[in-house]
Image 1 (cartoon, chains in turn orange, blue):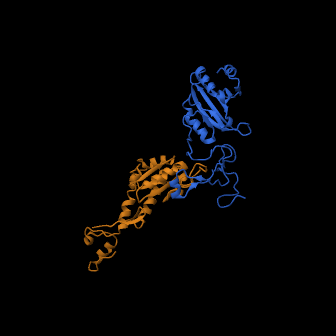
Image 2 (tube, helix red, strand yellow):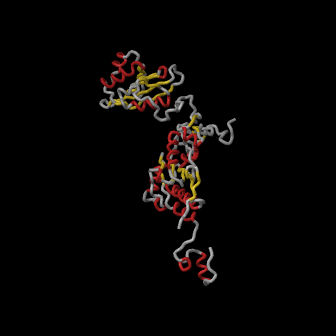
Image 3 (cartoon, chains in turn cyan, blue):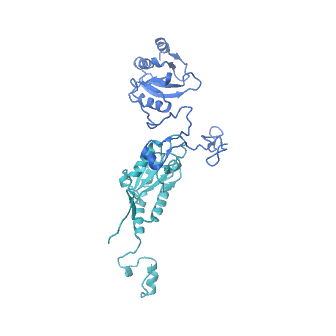
Amino acid sequence: MGCSPNLPKTTMVKSDFGYNSKIEGEVIVTRADAVVNWVRSNSVWPMPMGLACCAIELMAAGGSRFDISRFGMEVMRFSPRQADCMIVAGTVTYKMAEVVRRIYDQMAEPKWVVAMGACASTGGMYRSYATLQGVDNIVPVDIYISGCPPRPEALLDGMMLLQEKIRQEGGSLRRTFRGRTVETKIVS
Amino acid sequence: MDAAALTSRFPATQDLAGKDMPTYRVAGTDLLAVVSALRGEQGFDLLADLCGLELQGRPVRFGVVIHLLSTTHKEYVRLHVDAVNDRVPSVSSLHPGANWHEREAFDMFGITFTGHPDPRRILMWEAYPYHPLRKDFPLAGIEVPLPAADVAEVTGQTVEPAPMMGGPFVSHGGHFSEGEPSALDQSWNEQKPKA
């Protein structure tokens, strides 16, 4: 970030801190990653994988009191094709693990997973033959949220952490498609 | 409830003198006739519950308990059936509501219900090799492959015994204790092997 040495000093100071319409006209210079990540992080469409009581708190987070739409996440999509963040809210049994993994596979890249609550994170209090001991055994998890169940505020905090993580991702124009790495070209 | 009529008509039926409701031990061969008679003649028209149980120290290992309710006389009756050779006749022809209860008893204990219209597991997946509520099955489970072969291949995951950390967790200090539930044997955990 710099500016032309011919300009008066006051303008130089101003332009160091941000967008100056007098210099830059209607052009903003930035990194493609930053723009893409900005868009992605503010329109996370969750796939509500509600399996137990955590789903009740997830529903509360969608209601007007906690209002997850403040973060652009109110568009709960029950189709994995239209979602990009799976919120695993509840106890994952071994019988259900297959379904969770299949739905994760059906989601389009880029995709993220939030393990909401003790059961999704570690199996929680269900130390038994029937319960998967943490959903990270079958899908990669980005954010773990503690609580049994977590309050909606905790979920929102976790989702804001996920936004922060998305904003710091690199190579956001790169993706893998059928085993090949594909670079998206921006054509102006 | 006409107890005398039941025991005289079915000599193998034994009155167990239940404290809370009339309780009978019924022979498996008589079960359908007994349930049918109770439903048709004594008004026990609702099957309230059917569950399997394992009784240690008895000659027959497994049994089934059936609770019947009379919606006209407002009373219950309880029937015990021993699962000789792990087999009990299905009562789902008389009470269709027994269907899923019998599937659960089969799933959890391995009791076969002869004449059941749909004898599949109901809670665990079809290929699961054990019956988890049996006394000799550990609560943590036994390692087996995941139900879906493709998911198992991608994730490299199996059904693993759950870490028990000396558990199961119990509360100490009796009823209304404010203490945290904890394992009875705390001498070992995931990091420290059991001595």
